[in-house]
Length: 169
Image 1 (cartoon, rainbow, N blue to C red):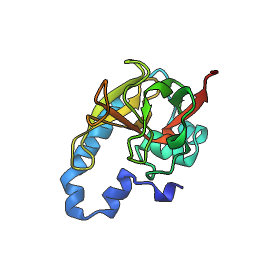
Image 2: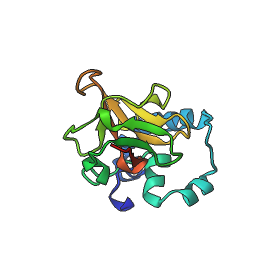
Image 3: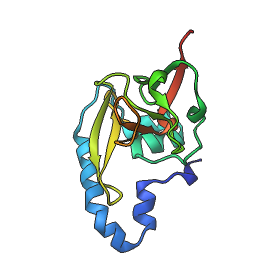
Image 4: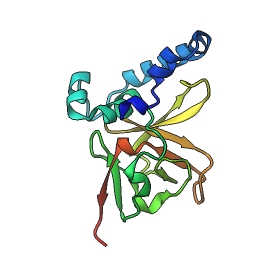
């Protein structure tokens, strides 16, 4: 459940004061940047809370991270499409899914270059590249440069941020 999720708010409140001071301003800047963007699908915070489960809200709207190994989508191997759980935009194809061993569903490419947007994420005191849905701005996960060929990328996604739709064989 949501109690087991690693949230930035938890890290900020539960961490040492020095650590909070070290990356607190980066977190605020990151949040402010995301808040300035407009998307094709936008809802008030109240409506997002109504439309999403608590766990999905935490991931998609608050950039929480689900516990590793917790998503049923990790073991999803059927042919199909992984879509944003916030707005149903197609994000990844099963043809680019691979077993990364990280505990999160991983892909070597998005379904299209316009399906996602990326932004620098400095919230944990390190630089990572956050991946968001280009249609609703929902937080999907992060992309790293340690993936397989042909791209060399690993889109490490939260299963809670995605839904799966099988396609006929």
